[in-house]
Length: 277
Length: 359
Ligand SMILES: Nc1ncnc2c1ncn2[C@@H]1O[C@H](COP(=O)(O)OP(=O)(O)O)[C@@H](O)[C@H]1O
Ligand SMILES: [Mg+2]
Image 1 (tube, protein in one colour):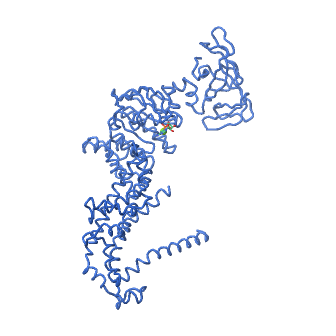
Image 2 (cartoon, protein in one colour; image 1 turned 60 degrees about the vertical axis):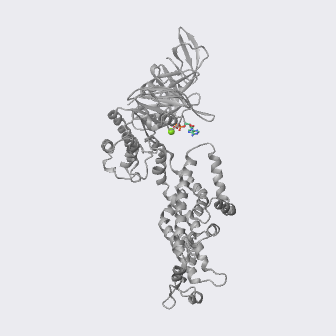
């Protein structure tokens, strides 16, 4: 490595480190402060909790005064079910649109790409009316349906790109082998899409888990609230219970971090594949 | 094992015709090689036999049965792809058995077939490996193994050796020939490499621009090409061509004259005075001499030494080049003028439409 290259690489790393701090900083701040007493949160927000400032009061209150476990399980159900459906239908639709030429396939692909460009929130009122008349108001099903609709176009778009990179000879070989079309999809194509599926999974999960808007308009009872909505009850108009807010937020962050760590290796493979090669 | 009959087969993509009225009959157990320049429709024909592409017109019969409407797996074929197309996420054993699951082969039978194919192709040690851990030649053998375990009536190969290096290509070629001897099955083999075609084939099908130019035994194509295209395609370096004209007809013989060679006589047949002809002679049939049935002069410009033979590139009087093979250690020097002659059986004459004229 020449000195010039070394200087360049140090420069790049400085930028990356700065960006990482910027991204991770607020999360660390939230988690750190969730373990401190109220006075310490405001007194020295940047300090780590020590013996005198350490407190679990936020977590106690969250567990005592709210239905946090219900919210949690609601969020998990909604996120995971939506993700599973987005991945399943997304991959199947992407396969159909790239593999088969049928009447209206181009129109269908165009229609789906409109879904990427138009934010689903523009249809909030219509969605609310629709869910009401379908009797799905205040159910997790309503949320799942909306999120599947929200996630599908992008996932079809990304997965189509990846499917096009799978050599056509593979599917022809499978056809000569007598493998039925559905099995070609599930046993030959899908396993090769793993990195892409991990990428789409993360891009699907994060906005769903963090979404406040649709739980706010589509759910009204404690039994259907999600974590993000649940946290709001600690944010009062006059007093905000910061201990509880930070504790609940810390808990809300945790699953996303865990999923990201699990999927990150696949994710990086997915993001960079195709770029090289 | 089965014969294969292709009748009036056509394939069009929109306005472009990829296959034009292809008729071909292949005997049971025959090794037929489709050869032709890249883009001439060889793969398309093979894929249509396999059932991967539909026909725009015409019929395909395998073992006497019309298979136009049958799916690939129902046709009793197995295909080996140029890219090998091994399933990357399955090990060698799984690659070979995967297809058998769906065609109702019981597990014990699957194991027996895999064991046998592995023995035949020396894959026993590799059965648990994944394709990414195999060399090119090993992948190729796995791809062939996957075809063998299906026990197909017809094997289809699409340029199976073109991704291998030269040495491996030769040894795999020999292996494929041995395999055919062992299995005695019908094989349709696509290549653009004429050496592969000559060495492997019982019969060669030469294709050009979606048409079959000639079908015949390798040496028949070499010694009696039916037209200009086949004459120029088979043989390396390619046949030399000399423009010519019928100058006169006397006593049933036509006098053929050209600027770059001495006049020669051929049976007149239906030739008329003034007909344009092309005279072709292979480089390896030209020898140094003074007079012969055919004789041409040239000035040596370049000599390529290959060892067992050398190729002299000569400038003819009409300014174009021709090639002559020179045997032995003494090669002509650039600048030297040479007279090269050829015997009558080695001289090919073609008429204006490119068809062979009897000599
Ligand atoms: N799906 C397709 N659409 C349009 N043209 C095609 C298609 N597939 C092949 N062709 C054309 O058909 C011709 C023959 O192709 P191919 O059979 O692959 O040739 P080769 O003899 O090299 O195997 C080529 O000119 C190619 O461009
Ligand atoms: Mg080809």
